Amino acid sequence: MDSLITAASRALAAGDPLGALKRVALRDDAPALALRGIAMAQLGEHGRARALLRRAARAFGPREAVARARCVVAEAEVALASRDLRWAAKALDAARRTLAEHGDRINAAHARYLEIRHLVLLGQLEQAEGMLAAVDPGPIPAALRAAHELLLAGIAMRRIRTGPARAALARAGEAARQSGIPALAAEVENAQLTLQAQVARRVSRGEERPLRLEEVETLLSSNTFVVDACRHVARQQRKVISLVKRPILFALLRALGEAWPTDVARDVLVARVFRLKIADESHRVRLRVEMARLRAVLRPLAEINATPRGFALSPRNARELAVLAQPIEEKYADVLAFLADGESWSTSALALALRTSQRTVQRALDTLALAGKVQSFGRGRARRWLIPPVTGFATSLLLPPALPVD
Image 1 (cartoon, rainbow, N blue to C red):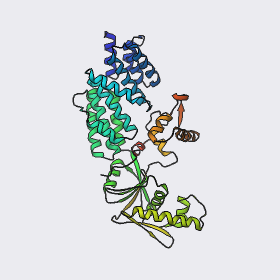
Image 2 (cartoon, rainbow, N blue to C red; image 1 turned 30 degrees about the vertical axis):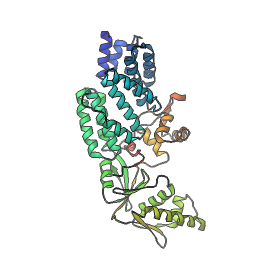
Image 3 (cartoon, one colour; image 1 turned 120 degrees about the vertical axis):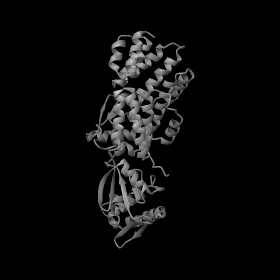
Image 4 (cartoon, one colour; image 1 turned 90 degrees about the vertical axis):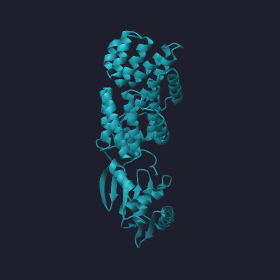
């Protein structure tokens, strides 16, 4: 490796992409193409970066398996940064194995962290946690140790575990300082600010107030009966009843929870849940049927009592009841929550993360674009969607499909 390539590599490792480009910008040999691709990625030019990395991988000879594997890992990182979640996971796994077999433990560990980050973005926390537990962060450089701790913190925050999240972020901050990379230190700082952001609202006894992640954890660990409108479950400490697949029942439960300790009139329930302005006897019969189903589902945790004008919810073993709602509620809030991280997303990536069809996501984005809430750039497969981050809110923490039961 010549002196310019060595100097460019050191500049990239220190987080100085412009310094690296000054040394290799006019070269088209394979190592220079790879370094130019990484530099462009650090500057945010993801499309150009992926093209350069692919050229570099083709330019390396058949005997340079390690160099080609490093290009694959770099391209996967760029794809992840640009929220292209459909990149070839098998190719990344093969590259990681190649690097490990040739003794490149650092880049092999980096590839593993990319796989874990991909799983976290898709909400597959169990698998991500298992893979992360198998990685030993001891012998790797400070920058990768910071990435390890950031992943631990991200999973802990999505698990609503603020204690482990704070500890992991403290270790990440120390590792970032040791690495000397300003961008990494800024990423840790942003993660720490997330802990202080509003992630939910508590509605109880006719009053509403915002909650930070630590306050959500305190609420869920208390003896309060919680109607969780973020995940469509009812819970009291370790007892959880899921209504994810029964939206009518959950809508009834939420209406009763928001009115607690008073009752809700039958006509109000019909109008809110069935979206009807005028209720006739058939709708009242349907309401009684759905209420009976809800009563049976909630029997371990609460009772539903009929009153002269409607129905009232009564927890069995709790003195308090609270509705836990998202900080911002509107149509397509789940799409906005993903876009609120400030990154640009493709419709295919959003469809994967939301576990829905790409066409459904496209309709949602078109509606939001007409309302001026999202914007796009690029065309065809290169089209990306984004919004400015919502100041003071951390909606992405509400995205996991279910809360832990224990």
